[in-house]
Image 1 (cartoon, rainbow, N blue to C red):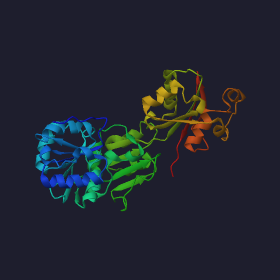
Image 2 (cartoon, one colour):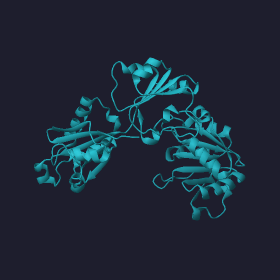
Image 3 (tube, rainbow, N blue to C red):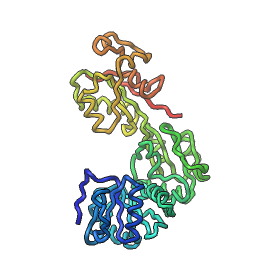
Image 4 (cartoon, helix red, strand yellow):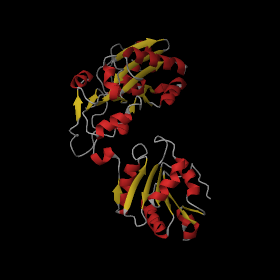
Length: 368
């Protein structure tokens, strides 16, 4: 048995158990530097400690449990049947299981076995196959058909889906070539990254109203807005995605606690009928970069925390320059110019609102 130091481990693990497999695995290990390599003690060649190769005794199934917990992906030079039997007891769910890729003893077939989408096994398979001059084998329907992967739609941009309830049924509509509507109100526009055209069964609409009138079998809706009661009908067989487009400009008195700041943000977004899941960044003046209340809020939600100098803020034209704010900060405004600078918008959704110790402005990042 071996002990794996999680803090020292690389992203991926390569495992081989045969003489030919070890030879290929050692070659791959030199090219694929993001991986640790494991093989049996009996194949020791004497340089393992020098180049960071891990040796183990006993069966590979005995170390797989630790590998599953430690690595994002596992690349195995082991027969597919054996791998299926070994990993079966370790499987939990597609959100937490690592990517698993299996390679035959000659390096001819590189097979995506587990967590092809969310775990990245399909991308890993393509990369490893290229390094080995092997044949990538991917069976995920959306990849084979070169269509939209519903569970990954917008993932590269940080989009979140509101709920996974309809992921499976909408995915079925996509791959079964039923009529699927895409309605995008905000967020990055370059989500289609295939060289081929958008499949014939997928239609893009400018509004939910138009999509409902055209009676599609399924829908993908991309918006930062909360839907109206009438609009929610589109989600009968639909997935709602939240793009990261909302920018919060915040000014606050020194020592304002996180709870007050958070409550102002939540109440403001509710008033605007915006989803908090679409917040991308909280922006303020650089003299607030150590404001604990702001730091606690951005850490809680995982938002970007961006600060600007007085000079930068003063380059932005704002609605109501304040001599009082200038006296204390050196800038004629904080929340409004900060939101404008980050979003790139000439006009904000909310120019400025004062609530207790907090001033808030809200902008939307525009994507061409």
